[in-house]
Image (tube, rainbow, N blue to C red):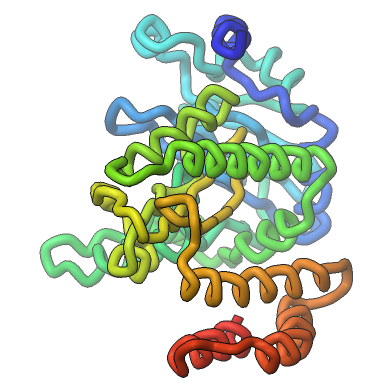
Length: 377
């Protein structure tokens, strides 16, 4: 029945998302207009066409502002007129014959109705005067941060960009830097300002629809981990636990992973913070650490759990994990609106002092590790 329901949802697949109505995008644009002022424009580029047979995924910020997944799209938010103009590539008939419908510039009426944009134009109209074909502005806002896509984070992307820049035989600019460079070349003397802090601030506060998606992503992560726990026994390979969790994600509509699975067994593998090989065989007496979550409709979670391969914790494992659980509960109990993460951590640290004082640690190293956890978070 589960598979039949999933197949039905695939049969009804459409080239546009159904999680957000036009009104939600318009509310987001209004906040951008307020932030950039009445004399400036903001431009955001979407993800380019994939260079392989990966499942296409839009960048986070472009999806946040439009819901459009068509590769090679651009969005212009004009603070002068408070108009939103979406640029889409011309129809690629060969691609559509091979892969199915993709929204293009020829679908202007449909796209306006779906997204709420004021106008849809072709990317072919983006000449040297773009994004100011209708007159001057005081500034152009563009993103400085690298666009995050499937299983990507800003920190990892920046590290990769730095490695490319340091490569004597490469040295390419990041896509966002090249875009800003072209804006400066084509609009000399005009201020090119950073849109990233504005979008970061907007995205830090979630709407009710976004919260529902984050909650669903978290629920699926929990279900996936529980399926991995049920599949655990000596002799199983780490990636087989990953497969059990991934099945739960996929069958419930999460087509992609939030990040690559960390499925580590044994002390040596667990000590590698971002262990990814997932190829070791589980041994009785060892612990398993799984940190894995889905990308559900562009929203993700990050959940990790640890459990014993043989089904029972040893005395020293229970000793340490009990402190971890106490600290987790102390943190969760103090999360509330209007309080900073640093304040919550300090409150939890103080609450843990009696716990540390009454715990009989079997080794000084265990006590030191528990103290470090509580003091540093």
